Image: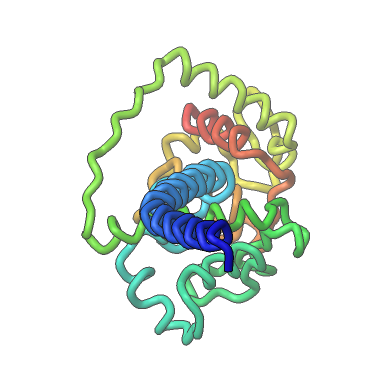
Length: 265
């Protein structure tokens, strides 16, 4: 072996050793960056899920996951995280259960309280089953629901977030939009409102803003009105048909406005 060949071999070994040293030295840095990236991605998923929950889920499960009457169970509670899988005998993880339930919906209630509309308890939300949500959106919603675990179990306590109180002008404006929704959605075909409609097949709503809070124990006037639209058969006013269906499909903002209008009556 020539002197030159020996030097080349030695240099190759030195370079290999240096590269190995650099690789192992950089590995913790790379791992740290990956961890930061994963944390940021998880936070983004939760934020996306929060927006989806606000738009699609809060009417039945509550704005903070506290549940709404007979519409839907609480998700932000200790029993959901500690007992749900045992109660159902679910063999997988809670995340898999949440994701599957959102995607496929639920035909039968797991508890008698949540009776649904007589057909399904919870509609399927996945595009695969005819719903509006993509797989990544279902994953984001699942991440948001699971993010309640620490507060549900008392591991973490969040400071209350102050929200602005709507001005009388804002409330009046929303009620004005709700009045239009009432007419455009055909509510007046079944319900009478003094000076606006003369429907007779459904209860008279001329004074519903004052009466709603007295209808169902445990439900505020606002929650009762929302439930009455989303699940018309959850409470039946005496003297009216036992099986009814609301006549339209409203967006969340339209339902908010309609409820604001009805609360003024």
